[in-house]
Length: 285
Length: 309
Image 1 (cartoon, helix red, strand yellow):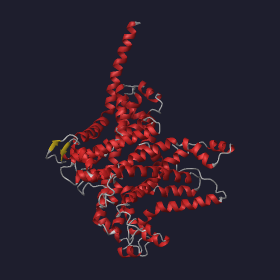
Image 2: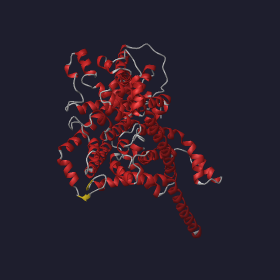
Image 3: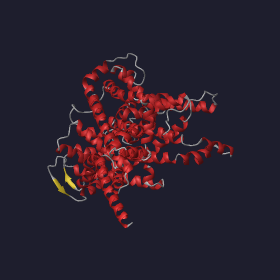
Image 4: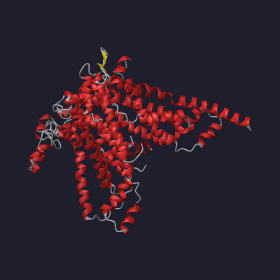
């Protein structure tokens, strides 16, 4: 997949009037896209009194006080660690379980594997809302509600089928010869998978990881209904609760928001290329 | 010969059963989790939708299709259904148009294009929840952009209570939904545009084709896979809209921006005894997603296998 952000740069040519106009229009459009984020940062640095006088522009008397308040009241470190552990463990399991399941689908031409592939692919499109009420009910009755494990089990089950679809498609493009050689050398099927195939799955694993980081880190509805305790609540429902609490204290609420946004932005800037090709490759969902 | 054939078929049968065993073991973890926490809950949703029931299971009474009848007799529910369809259609078109136009404008090897692409992705990176809250402020009637825009342009209608006006609330949320995800559609279309061979445009120019006919005769057919993916994707996501409604309007004012997801969420978790009714709402959402996907698949003359392949 061509990487949309890494187009080679041309030597700057003389710009025609038309392309200057286009550049100006695109500059305005870009401003429209970045301004709401910038304004969030501006607001997070203002006193409320300044917000009323200067609601939309760079702060005159910038203060970090809002961040101190937000840090102390919203339980940021705990929420961050909850998000981090839920996301990491879920993704590790999704990668392992889905790549294993995809292997026989891609390699063994059996009625069983063909049927299972159709089953996995056809539930990809079913909206999560269809499982919401039964899942909550089930997790209540087995005592999993208000645990990180519940979130992990949910994400693994909800996202495995799409990952299986991606892995199966990728494994089919890998030549069989390597595995066959390994099997002739006395490897069992599990060793052939883990020693020969698994190391070749890095590109598609990158896609699976990126897509699931965005899905799980930013997910809101499921943790909203599955978690009623501060102890295990991840970042998104935490910031939502924080906004409800500080409904007109925009400065505190946006200081909290900036803190919520920072880990994602760091990950994006560090892994820009992977994010862009992951989004492009995973867009079929 | 006969013996060899018999031996062969016997070994191949025993090999098949061995392969089957191995395949089953490879798939067992995925099968277990997907079956217990995805497939069974889907089936259970259908089952619950036929019962009058509350989520803590104090009472459960079979009522047949009563929940569905009630849904179609409740103005709030009909409103949520209408809003969901309206929202999904408008937003799916708008997301794809915005993504395609920006991709066309930025499909150029300038450094500025690269920076703009990153900025346009910012909404996608900060999540729907945060986007909803920052835009609640931008659309705020006294602190937001409205008063400033009125002062700058003299156009009074720009100064509105965008989220507090029942006639505008749903449309205001639509703007935010499109803003938030444009970056993703821009990437889908940039990837699509990069698959179009440059030679095609050169040949067309030699034949005297203008910019517009180059676009409609070369670009559009060549990026049809991206358009199919983009529209299907947008439609399925938009029908499920929850985060931006919840963070910006909570379905209000009144029920003006209620959608099926926010409706079933509040019915299931803010009221007792309505879990069956909420499940019926989920089933309606399910059929809506399936119906729209089917219509789009036919529209794009593609079998599902092609879309996923």
